[in-house]
Length: 159
Length: 181
Image 1 (spheres, helix red, strand yellow):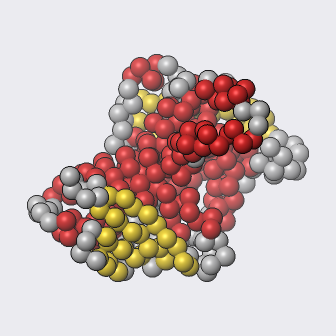
Image 2 (cartoon, helix red, strand yellow):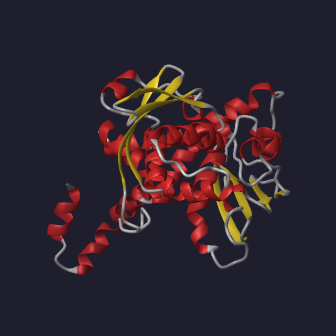
């Protein structure tokens, strides 16, 4: 109902600017990537519980990330990651050279742009999994050439 | 997708059953949040299934070249139960409950993988949500792609899922389904 008010109020395009914050917010909540990410988050939360049921206690952050990259990754995406790097300050870069969801895509750089929304769900899954293991993080994916994907796990600072 | 997917996951055609099942569950939850009306969600699931089915039909015929040309409902049911459902759901199915001169039948899917980790709230079922409608939709879409018009609805029945299929007619036009809508 607020949109009606704004549409009424904004006769001049310059007036729209004062509502940009609101507009951004509205779009952020409605776009497909965000919704897929939310779905993934829930899936990741549940999945990690099933996968980590019989695993030994994971204490450090590095152990947890390693667990995600080995056991969790192979249970969910069918293979282990190819490369894991960290700057030891809460940023991990996980590389998978043949990522599941992009395996059916033509290889190369042609469709890199449209692959974004196919990675929203896996990003959500990883974020959900990390969250369940008590590591709140921001997960983003970058693709340079299909089907290789780099996931960046940025661990939120502990409060 | 199959039960013993663990060993075969590296194969690009397979995916983890748990991942699939949970993702489907989350998808339905999200749809419920979006549409609010369980009946509308059922319709959307049916539509998704239909679109999947029209494409799956091609894939199925490409993989199973030995499938005979179906001339009656019993044959359709047999191909669905013996070939199509095991191929795509990794579980077995049986046809039963034939009525209306073989024009209406039920396919019972045992251990429906979609339901594996799921408990659908009874109040939603009562409000018209049909959780596995996507399978019914896929069957409808696949059969429409080979020119059989059917109506399909899914019903949960404990551990099994029943898909009620009613044969309507043989489509005569030569336009492939999905091209015109």
